[in-house]
Every structure is written in C-alpha cells, then in structure tokens.
Length: 158
Image (cartoon, rainbow, N blue to C red; front, side, top):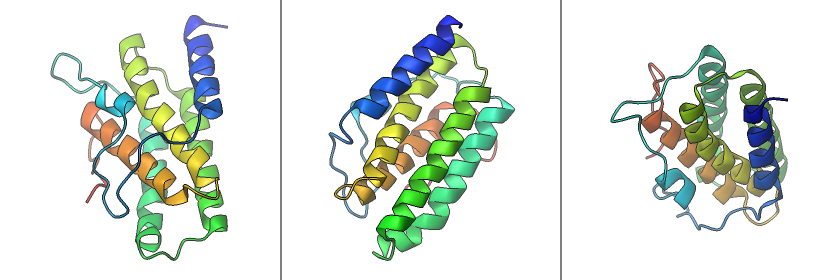
C-alpha cells in the first residue's frame, strides 16, 4: 500500500469518526466555512491541477447538491432525502478517492475539501444537523472550485 493511500485512508477514517460539524452555518447563507477550508491555498497563485476522475466526481456532487438546494431552502427536504443525498455524495467521494491521481501537494489540498464534505455527509445522516451538513458540502464544493482548475466550474454559494 502506498504512502498516499495510507495517508488518505487515515484522513478519511479520522473525518468519519470526528464529530459532525463544529461550525454553525447560517440557515440561508453559504458564506463561512471552517478552518480546514480557510487553510486551503493556491499553487503559487495558480489553481491546482485536476484529473478526469476528480472533475467527474466533483461535477456529480455539485449536480446532486444543486438539485437539492431549492427544496432544502424551502424546508421540503425530509430525512430520507438527506440520507439519500448523503449516500450519493459519499459514493462520489469514494469514487474520487479510488480513482483520482494528483500530485502530492494538490492531493493534500483536496483532502481539506473532502474532509469537510465527509463532515457534511455525517451531519446529513444525523437527526439534528441535516441542513448544516448540506451547507458544509456546498462550502467544500465552492472551496474546491476556488482552488482547483476545473474548466466551467460554477460556485453554488448565493
């Protein structure tokens, strides 16, 4: 097993066992984010490279979130909806982890966004933090778009 795989596995294990979210999000704002997202940086002023697996997985997550946001904001997204959305996001994260091949520095930056997404997935599966979990995924997607070279990417934030 490569060092990259071991680090990623450890990072994901910690993220899955961590408490859901430590940062509160405004009910109808996607502004903010947590320390991990705020610590993301560019590659000497340039966005980090991506590969087809990463772009495909992130595009799928973005599409799922974009489809869900109107009903979430309207209060018409139930527990089963959140669970299904969380499973869809988790599935695409698993795909990205298994298939994405980035340089080490870019991979480290990506882990910051993926860890925040995993916190969001856990929160969407909880009874108390579902909306905050969805917003955590949105914030992570927007941070990804600000830091990674993904042609045609559009932020979801208001």
